[in-house]
Every structure is written in structure tokens, then in C-alpha cells.
Length: 148
Picture (tube, one colour):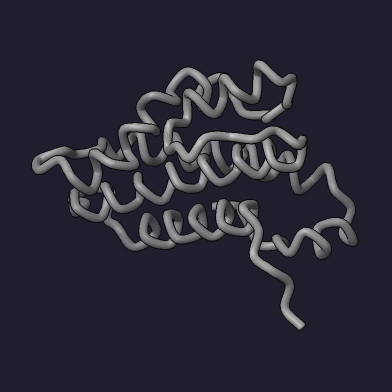
């Protein structure tokens, strides 16, 4: 019987989708619309990751896509998100990616920002999964390859 999907599963799956799309883009002439789709999935990945950490620590959170607000909520409740300074400092940028990448005509995310975000989120996920033993990873249901 398949276990119920968790927010952590959703975080990892959104990250995997972002990496998959990125792997098919040319760095020389990328399609901007695909870059925006990658940005959306990276934002979703961070949002679900943070919400999972909040849930696991018994912290109620608002129905929000605001990464900055979710990070502040975690910090206020002493929840260690183990995210890099880059991800923390650029949380407003990631928040914009959720809606701007889909609804603002002419909005374009820079490819270098996508690549940096993938690197930083990958490091965050890798640190988490490396801290677990194999049995715990299987229980979590998220043993996906998160390396780029």
C-alpha cells in the first residue's frame, strides 16, 4: 500500500521537475518561458519544504506562498530550516517567482538565478537526507536523487 504524499515529497518532486526542465535547456539560447516554469517549481519546492518543517515541529502556518513570511515564522519558533544564507537573503525573489512567473506578462527570471537556486536548494536537501539513515529516508517516502 502506497503511503500518503507529504509536503516533503512535494518539495522534492517540484525540485526534480525544475531540474529536469533545466537539463533540457540550452545555456546559450534558453527559452524564457521555460525558465519561468523552472522558477515556479523552485519556489514551490522551497514553500513545501519550509511548510513540512513547520508541520513536523507542530507550528501552524498561514495559507501563504510568501517564502519570507514562512522563514520568519520558522525563525520565531526556533525551527532550524537549515537553509543557506543565499536562500534566506533571496526569499523575496523566490516569493515573486510563484506568481510573477505565471501572471506578469514580460516577466523573465535570469538563468543564472535559476542555476544558483538549484545549487542552493540541492545543498539544503542533500544536507537533510545525509543526516538521516537509510531506514528513515524510506519511512519519509522521499529517497529521490536530489543531485544535479
